[in-house]
Image 1 (cartoon, rainbow, N blue to C red):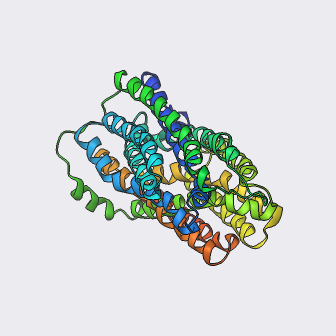
Image 2 (image 1 turned 60 degrees about the vertical axis):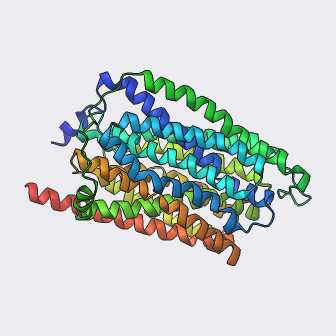
Length: 426
């Protein structure tokens, strides 16, 4: 039985073009996610009256957008198709990027928050549709591995996003004598134009991608009539303990990922006494490690169970986080970078494991719950910012540590669930 599973194809050849276009979307939202990460420190410098907590509300607006649009994204796929959802998501993503231009003219922090919210609303709809679309583009037996493969393009976008932030934003920031970002009042307009330029460039490319997807014939297997049994399906999902635990684990995973990456630009300058721009180079290494590790974990899934890999990854990530908190220095910095290697497995694996055993309608609606869990990034990240204001950056990493404990708990529960299912089928 095991041999048969390993020989099951990853993807039907007739869906290669559709898969390639959808996989590119994983890259595009990776750019947005990681282009935004270093900007908490930048906006804190631009709008000098902001605390770390207040500046991190950019991340709250961003990830609350995901939360807000997860259910509408599911309704779109239910009433129309996954392809429609992908197009709506890409369109809103581009609109949010373009809105940063009038926000720059107004020079008010609240308008930047609104622009990032709109941008992320598009990403929420896009992810709600793209993730389950990938799951159904081939055999059920390889669904989680197929999603991990598609998600492997996400780190490419992540690295691209952080490089754009490093080369086009952070490298052009004015610094004071101590090497920290300092922006005089007369430099605000110029600095804001520097910040939004990468977003406007990405938006122009998104318009081209939108047209390519719109004119490409794609499978409509995800269509499912006009009736939306949203609340009825959610009630069924809430009775599925594994699915509910997956949503909880996803909430804490996204909170951990965004917090780890956002405050890298606070932790590394403090421990290595380097500028934020130099610190971003370490962040880039972390994202490259993240991307490479996802390919490694995808390959390991051919031999090892996904829940076992998830358990090992979350335990090691937790140990590395303890180094970040209590050891610090070069060991803390290397540990902080190393966490990314083990986070790479988590999002697609939790998503795939949470979707196991769901019928077509539950998969559609259930994906929205797993995307709504991205709210973790909106809540945990500002909370860590508040801890930095109240204590220090080292102590603040206790929050990601707690997140990894929850993820390990989900992996252990899934392992027990898998063994019970095997005994039942015997």
